[in-house]
Length: 498
Ligand code: AHR
Image 1 (cartoon, rainbow, N blue to C red):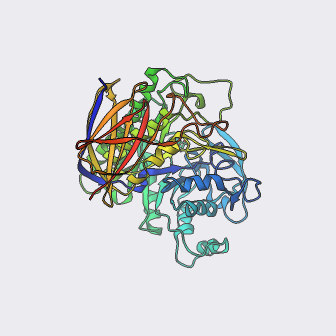
Image 2: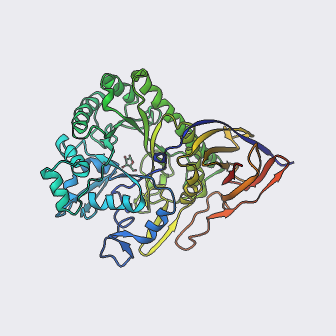
């Protein structure tokens, strides 16, 4: 007798913001240089320096927002080095120190955003920069008045402002961003935020926060940071629009060849992302007391495997280059799907999210090597979610077995333009799951799934299409749609209402 899961959608929750599907491009290892950016003189086909195969792939999936230039890199970055005559500098992030030519600067990043139709999210330097430097960057990107700063932008080839709304004031300021204590950060944040909002009152400022559970496991993170920060700014709520939290899933053991226990541990860890969002919002609201709806900005999240970090649980690997490049299996793709379920459920309190990072680094959607490129299972997982974006989220009631402390089958649903979109994950490592979908329309527009022969299957330069989207068979039995989901798989079905 197959194990049957019953699933039905319930009531509307909140609109699924495109900003939940953001990406993160840091000047770190081969994410920007030699990843997205090959430069206009490269023999690799490119558009004004951005490699064409990658841009084309990114245009086919949701990239509604990109955070740049860091990360830890942001607190060493001086934007003037990357406009006009470029200034080579030491590019520093996460223990790496390289020559950064600054060939890729503000104009180039904005060009990328225009190519992808993505909203820019700029991370400002609060550790080695100044308030004036951040204000000038804002004026350079968004100013309309005729000033020396906007004239400079025009001289550099851009007449109209880009009108950048999202600004991060520092990054991980409790550690790589200067090891501030929370109260000092809050006092500095106010100074930056007042001046930024003088320059452009319409900017949305993201303050640095952290997650108290993650903090309790790491060095230099104060686990009462959010409390102390919010306490300090509680009478200055006009300055804070979002509070940032970073969540990396680190407990899954090896990137490939992991045990069954580690398989489920990683998926359970992805589930806890929702708890981190709720925790941060609870602290925010304790101090905001209904006076302002400050959102949570999950501006870095994803899997960070031990093979590419010297910290946290292992196993670590000594004999391979420490370059932030890691395997990306179907397990990782399911993890991102699980996190997205939480984002949709918390659509009222989440402001934005950025998967770390877009190419080559950490949980990337594509890997490059010279002329070659392949798409990871995570790319396909995001592609499976594209129709949820801007839809109205719906609750989903799932009756299913419990498995290693989590649901055997989990799901998310939304509605847009008379179409219900349902994405379902079979988390079982080795068994298929039969799922009965109740109360859905008779017209099935599309059913596609992402599955793989083994939970640690990957795409690679030698086998780039081993894992890709495939059609899923769905049939109607009475009033119920029935699907059989293979072990460790994810599927999206779309139904048209009459
Ligand atoms: O994404 C890699 C690094 O992780 C970022 O630079 C930093 O913000 C975080 O610690």
